[in-house]
Image 1 (cartoon, one colour):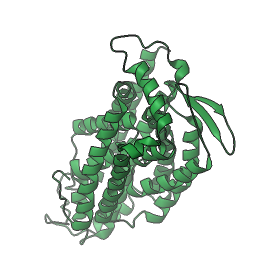
Image 2 (spheres, one colour):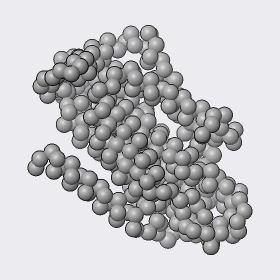
Image 3 (cartoon, one colour):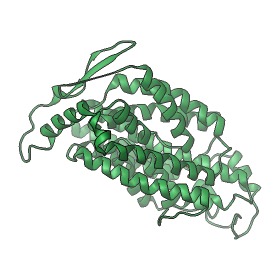
Image 4 (cartoon, one colour):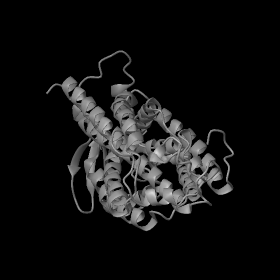
Length: 388
């Protein structure tokens, strides 16, 4: 089948899935319906007006997201996740928490119905993961075809991630309120911003000579040749040279890298646990881990982290929904997934034309802004930055 046919089939598939989700019930009868029934009725803060039009999760009076905004935000999330290999999950969270107003709405039930507050927190966490999961799937396949995915490293991260992604939903579902969630969300993102800022300093870059050499070779082939033909670079992608219990070796554009499988397995467990707690993919943690600890160039970090994220997302979503019976709004998810598909296709295509330094600077700025905004909003009750 030709490439264009595959693209058409993929678009048709995502549209069909989105349509089916859009016409399905927002939530089945269960804990959510019980919580709604126990919430005081009225039009005041922390109350539910049964006569109001259903919104998020089918709750009367809850925020309603216009379908086009869901698609556009999904495009942004998919693009940034598949381009940088990080922050896509954070942007998914920003959309649900701030842009669509779900967190501010859920916080109104903190005193009138804490159970509903916590159920909405879990729902936001899972909605984030649906978006990241699809983007990770598309990005993994795309980067693998481009020779920019280190399969053994991604699998080691995924092995450790399965346990972390299972344990955290089991231990925390129904126990985290929105203020706590937003505060920890901000702390984690702010900490990662500090790590990436260090990487831009001379001392942080000094230990990444191999990664810089591989990055230069890649940019010479894809970016530096303005208006020229970069030639056949298919043999310059990731080439695994050695599989072993204590050491795995591979090359990227002629530069050799190696790692001990034990460290990415342990790292995958910790990262998946943290990311499952705040309800995102973990790409924002995999990226600094792969660039700082494994010292890999950014051009292969995105694809490798996407594979690890995909496995942890499948595990976490399954645990939340089937073990802990968390409910989500499939109408909102369906529209966002259409945008995720579009953005995830464009990301790998456009990222190879953007120098690594600019990708990293973009991430640092976004991480600082979101981290400061959400940390203060969660723990102080208000954000010191506008828009958060």
